[in-house]
Image (cartoon, rainbow, N blue to C red; front, side, top):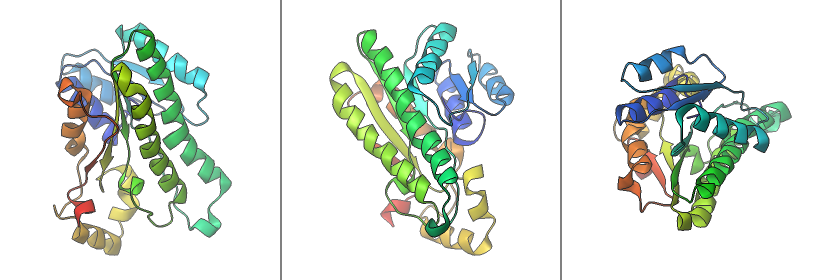
Length: 241
């Protein structure tokens, strides 16, 4: 579980623990509170402090190996870590582009690749769940790297599903709508943007991190065994509007 210290990642870790899983948390931020929340549910909690910027395939393989060594096995990979940098496209810096694409796209692919190899080596079976975005479907404004990364994330979700469904590995994604997290703070703090955003959400409210738990658990469980390559919106009706 990447990006597990707070926000959507922490909510995903808690939901999996409530369902009986022992999550391994990965983040560059302190994970004490997130681990305490998992352990309060009676589950074991692994943790790895990893900076996903510039993650290499070799380091991704080490992450998977460390998870298996700590908890005994890996059944579900959730790629949730994400960063965003806002700037008009004409002024967008190469540094911002590189960090967003590195964390939001490249790291997720390399971790999926490492998990896929682990699943294949043990004879198949496993789940990979990527946390996509509404901007996997739409163009947004002033977030070109984030749009590129989240669109790419949706694309390689489908690509890996095509390759790995035959060995029983389910690769899918959840696409949250406009959620009450740190990534949307600048939008929620702007009264005009906040009002316009809420007016377009049929549910009439910002999403809560816990709102994605249902879709996550479906894709992580045997109930989602025949779901491959899906991008499941959890958006309060945003895309339907």
